Length: 342
Figure (tube, helix red, strand yellow):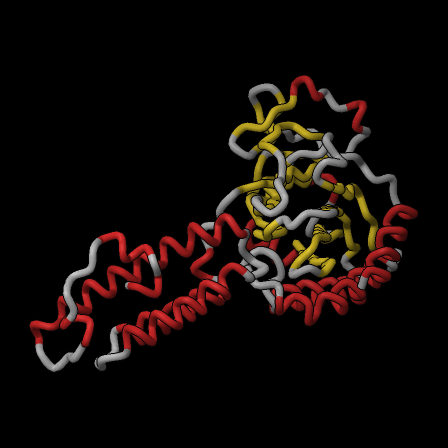
């Protein structure tokens, strides 16, 4: 897939002068082993006089390159005309598309992380339009980028998707307008930080940057929304925790552990404890969660398990539930700190 991606990058360079991204606000560094990264398109504005969605379909291709489970991976995301039509809003002088996650959330495990964003226009002729529609539907069927948090499904079709994108950009009906590839390597690229960037369809030196600002994820010129040129406003974020960890695979196993702990029988709690210890191993070796965050998540799950135990023992008054734990003397509070001595 790296060969396909290399050819696509070369193709884009030869077809257009790529505009450079401008950093407008900083939010910090991406720390290896500690940070998660993600990327969002905060705002995309397209002017009416460019015949968008009438003569030309817009497409944004986003490609993230990073390490995942000790492997170098290339993950594409497509913002095509179907998605844009569903979410676009009419604004003065054009239309705007807002707030779409296009990469992540993934742990940053060190090494090189690169993000490429390309805005192109595709003339609405039969073959090119049908090809773009197929690519967008293929990407959407596998939830690449925005709604998926598990990369396993992505790898199954990423090569085919990248080949399709390369074919689309090889057509004369497809014209890249602007974009950039940004590379981050901890300690080697001090000029690249997490933050909000803008790519504008104009010579970067002719844009009045002293008047440009970001307000609540929107691009402004002075006190008015920026509507002078087509642009993509995007952000690269770094965070120490991810709120969607309950959607990761290990959490479904935790549900099974809780069900085991609540089953009648003298040894169901002991069995649940053994399963929970195994879950800890699964948690700390997951490629989707950082080590520090794994400890926080484990403590949260452990607290839930202790609550389950408390409720289980409180059910004894109902009768019919045997539990050798209820026959033992109460343990001192600090005994719960040792998972196998609960």
